[in-house]
Image: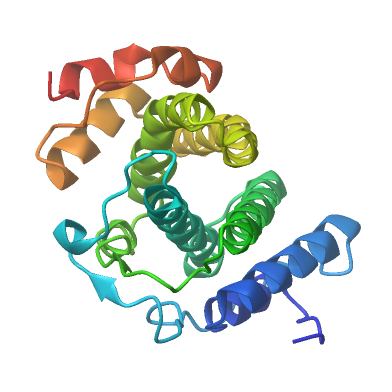
Length: 269
């Protein structure tokens, strides 16, 4: 798809309608460059796709049926791990474009769209990095079953931008900050430095993603004259029964400006 849309919302809708993950990633990067260069300059409005298009593979299954992701010298477990992470990154691309097209009617500063376009570009780059590594290991994205429940966070927040920001960057992506450093250590222990280096890139980028999401969550709280910590915890109480998963990488979360004051009181300690 080489013809650029006239507005960012149209670009977002078109990205969501691309089924092939490689094409979606490349188109996402193309649209990000166009927005950043000013070739696409208006946010506009577009019809919201009911859900992202996808190919027949990977087959989506419950979390309990996803292949084991054990990091060993045997590449099978590492392939399963990288496949699962590539699936998460593809989901993240969709979430970025969905937040743009879905909430385009909500008055937000241009910087909000700058941030989410930049994050979509990052997530597309991450997906391509992981797909490339899978090919180097003799596999490909779509070769294994994948988690079926990842879109639920979008569905439960589809009518509320504040809730979307509370859940996607500040719960789901923040969880990535908790688990990725340990995965990097295990990959390096089996001398898979190539995979570890790619995850380090992803981890470093995700710190800024959490920070940006928190920034805009707090912006909306300020608009509504709400205490952001109390508001975030109330959303978590409603959507996650008041509990977020531990253990936490407090160092990474602190780098994102996301202190334990937020999540400590609602942790499943």
